Amino acid sequence: MSASPEPGQPGEPTPGPARPRNTGVRLGIAVTVFAAMAATALFILRLPAMKGSGAASPEQVANEARIQVLALCDAVQGFRDEHGDYVSIAPYPVPVPQRGEAVPFPQDHEDFHRIGFDPGPAVHLQYEVRVEESPVGEPEVSCFARADTDGDGLNAVYRIRLDANGMTTPVEAEHEGE
Image 1: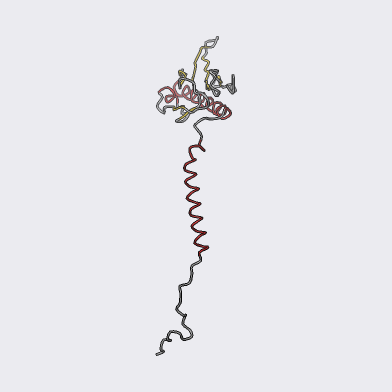
Image 2 (image 1 turned 135 degrees about the vertical axis):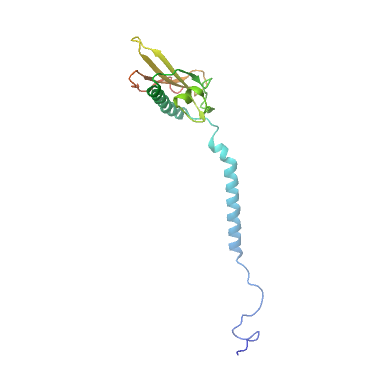
């Protein structure tokens, strides 16, 4: 058996003061953790401001109007194909949304739900479907989307016409940007 070396013998570390830890590494970790927590807190506090107030720019409202009025006319035509007649739908929401602010759109609105039109939970536009009789006795359908992006009471109106054969006109925009 070999005897263990005695303290102070070669081969055994000399007891002494504890090795100092690397304070630079500790300080770096502490600063990094603090910075990450501060950045996270700042992000959480600023998140509502980054999302905006629910207002859309006039360009965003115009794009939404062009897309949604076409979707509305598609839903109207799909309903006619399935049920044989067109449906007039009164303007909704009332009043016309202003300044690009989003307003709630109920998912259970009877008329829009019946034709299968769902613009989402919040909208920047008022929608309407108008069915009139043409001079030759055939139905003429107009799908409308309206917005008042600058709040002056003058509405931008987006319209698509749908004829008895299911053909649509290009989007007509009146007072765009209003």
